[in-house]
Image 1 (spheres, helix red, strand yellow):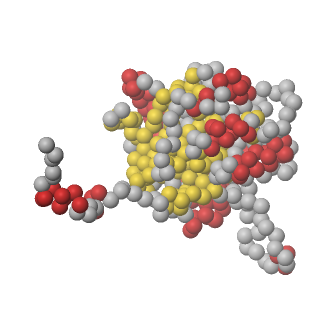
Image 2 (cartoon, protein in one colour; image 1 turned 180 degrees about the horizontal axis):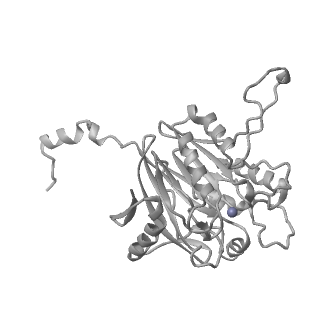
Image 3 (cartoon, rainbow, N blue to C red; image 1 turned 60 degrees about the vertical axis):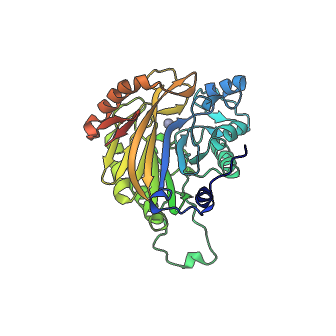
Length: 352
Ligand SMILES: [Zn+2]
């Protein structure tokens, strides 16, 4: 027998759905931060063998438009053949950059690091051109002031101010800015034409000041500190806190290749070192790393949690939940002096 819905049921089915205030989508979004991404040397050899999807096959990343993924690109992207005996010349193929960086939704990349000039000025220029063509926002290069006709005659109070060229992104109503710096001692002192933004107090403050009024969230990225040191240096603490006081909300650090602590300073967060993300190092501590998730509500940081990862066979891999307590002990030790505590809530390690 044919079933017909009762007339009162049709009334409910056809009545336009009223969305209440409670049901409106929450204005929450997420900043996801990873450490060093090195797509050359051993990683590129593995990609040649297993295909371009290999490095992130075991690590699902961005899944929607409310997530911004940030990282430090520790290799130049170039199609040129550079003959070098140095094992520290990191160069990635443009196809790999497209597959790994673009296809996996990298939002902001820092290019301010000690490997920016691994293939010379032309390598850096090609690399930046490729990021531009892939439409991946990046930062870490000094702003080159445009000379206008007759500008020499105008007395400009900002003349001589060095600033980092910002990258922008809009998430809903929130305009987000990204600025990246590298500690000067990591750059070649003989390179007089260096265009990488130095992490010195003046450049940091000038750069933040220049973008402050045009965005609601400022993310800063720093290549700093010392390799394999688990505690941040005095300079890292000074510069990170300075960036927050100048107006940044988030400070993301890298270069030590191992994890360092996370400090909740004033209303901001300083991740002193996020370790490696894609790398080919053998050291076991350099292969024990994390992904930082920052949940934002409008332009404010709402909560943050750390996801443990392990780098196995040169690629990041999610860690079994049974190892979360062990990971908590490691993070608590790193955070002890920074007075940041942690708690596991629903299989996530939240920081307070
Ligand atoms: Zn480095």
